[in-house]
Length: 150
Length: 150
Ligand SMILES: [Ca+2]
Ligand SMILES: [Ca+2]
Ligand SMILES: [Zn+2]
Ligand SMILES: [Zn+2]
Image 1: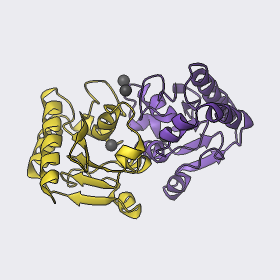
Image 2 (image 1 turned 45 degrees about the horizontal axis):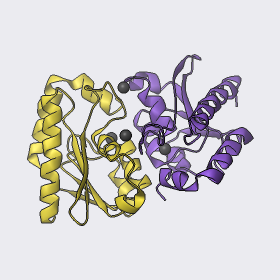
Image 3 (image 1 turned 135 degrees about the horizontal axis):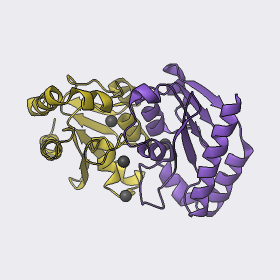
Image 4 (image 1 turned 180 degrees about the vertical axis):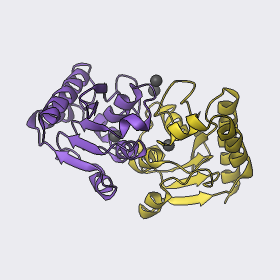
């Protein structure tokens, strides 16, 4: 964990909190270049945009408006929750070399697929991220289940 | 291959052609229930929406406006081209059991990951799909490379 990883997760958590306050699934994501530039931010838009594909990481990548892999291959993707198979696949497609997650207790994504492709995965075990998900899931278990294809 | 697979690929090719005529990456996708209902359709929107995440398959899923996995687990996903890791991951997330592709000569996606997860993959080796991609890539190699993270 580096200073940047703490900052990155703070921003991802801010995004998750925005989503929570909008009544949405509280997962946030940020893409940060190794030079420290915040490339983009996003949060899950299932509820807000009636979308099954705008997970936090996809929203974050979408917000870049077509950043090339020459940029993404020098970035870390932060997500408050372990990335599902779709979001993992997007990280692999765009050759993102590092993924830092808030937690994987609420949901264990495709971390094995990231590891197998030599993507560095760091779990910050951030209690804020899990607490926010716990609060959301207690109120809206059906929306959460839909989000993870259950 | 079934009658429905030919029909499914015809619709996916129509989508790819729409994309081509819009000046976009000519890849199309259709989601069809096993009862024959066409659930949704879409095509790659990289150029049209300045998007790095709206691949054909993601556009197609997005067009459903939140169909639950209880539906998608009874569907076939058609794509004119072998699905990249992101689109493969979306098929796995939503428990889609069958993926029918037009071709995988232009690009070999994450078919191994589909197979490993017991998703049936059928390659129709459809020359129309490859011809359209050849035409696009000859004119816009840089846009195509961007689409696959090169
Ligand atoms: Ca939508
Ligand atoms: Ca866009
Ligand atoms: Zn996801
Ligand atoms: Zn794709």
